[in-house]
Image: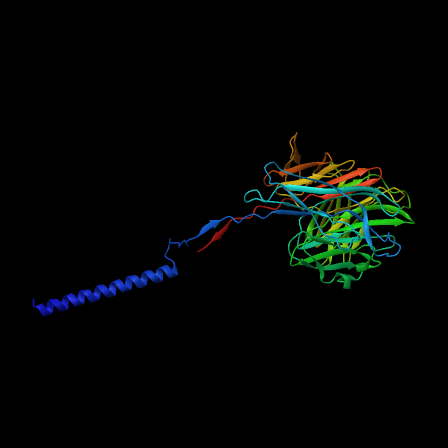
Length: 467
């Protein structure tokens, strides 16, 4: 074989090899792009745990009085201070308590705010609440409420701007950035943002106080929606009434975070029945904010048996009230199921005479994780736990400072009342898979109050990062 032919043959072989290699590379690239059968590309990633933030709770603050200064009928002043009860689980970092500014209240300090650093990646398990008893010519009764985290949206089902009412909308901003709040009032004419409710500025570490009559003058049964931007706020309504110059009770209305098709209101304490021809002592207020709805109301006693059922049509944007009549003395839960999202609350009274009191019971969130609840001072304190799920649930009630615990087994729809000690902080620990709702309530001859139990913030979920 000549040298020339050998070189040609070698070149041909090299050319073929190059073509084959190129084809293989090209085919491989196409196969990777298209995905080879059985082959799955795994991108490089890493998992990180975000740092937890401090738990921040804001309290409602002192009981306020409107119009005590005859020279300035619109001035708000302090009627009495509230007593704070707080605590956390062992191993939690110390809680720092601060006082918010309150520029709308004459010469007084504002409500308290509690800041607790996280425990590792989990937010602190801390609970706080306040209560007060007073008897004055313009304000009389007992009030208790939980200190709550600030949220971006709140629904306040309760209060009145009718004759004899001196109700106040309370907006607390415990954060470091100012909040801008829109206050929407739902009444007989539907939703409205009144001039006094548009773009309300709540400075950092400040509570604003707005008379409800300035937002909804003459509206007897309003529902108030609070929407905040810039920073979340803790919202509530202080409500009181005077009937023919006689004070008839005081309370603080707790917020619900959202409307829903199913609501549960536990811990409604009925202390007696209304007399013949008298106004009802238990009333449910409801609102379907966005669409017409049909709601079914079911009232159950502590034994889980149905005491009352009503089916009620709702017109979008217009609150409605339903009397809950014929209930005997005891503790009840009220369930509302509707064809569209609704909000609801129950007004309940010991009577309508001198020395009587009332409470607004708010809907309670479903608890699938541990909750920490502080029981403030007050007579007849009870923790009501209701199974909000469709199967048997188990929950343990345990004082954070030690002592005996109780484990409750609740059938679907079942409820149990646990007497609790004022000034004590408890943990509610649902067994995995269980869903319960709970409320703390107080009842005596002439005192009523109640507030729902909220779960602690969940730990920040892990994040997957792709470099």
